[in-house]
Amino acid sequence: MAKILIAEDDPTSRKLVTHVVDSLGHCSFVSPNGRHAWEALDCGNNFAMLITDVVMPDMDGRTLIQTLRADPRFAALPVVIMSAVVGVSEIAGLLKIGATWFMPKPMDRATLQEYIERSLK
Image (cartoon, helix red, strand yellow):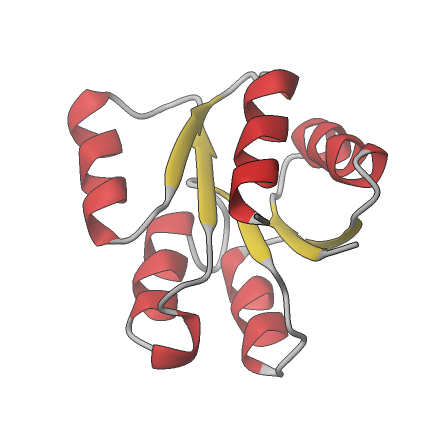
């Protein structure tokens, strides 16, 4: 069982992602925005991976990834970033700054499940 942090401000998306994580036997922890997620990671909660939205209040997903990758403790943390509002060049930019995978919204359960399984091998 792995601890997986989910940074998502949309209640519907948050519920769907949490359901997938929990149904795989992992423990999901939810943050309503990037700042809260960063604080949870920074406190040493030993999360195995992060699943985050791009557009969130307080700290967006892009800033969250940049903050993580600037800290050596999180250089290898798998990060799935998801969004319904970015184009191909934005996706490439997110991957370039350190996202491990991109997943479009609405979320595809099989894709998310595959990313989780691959991250935790």
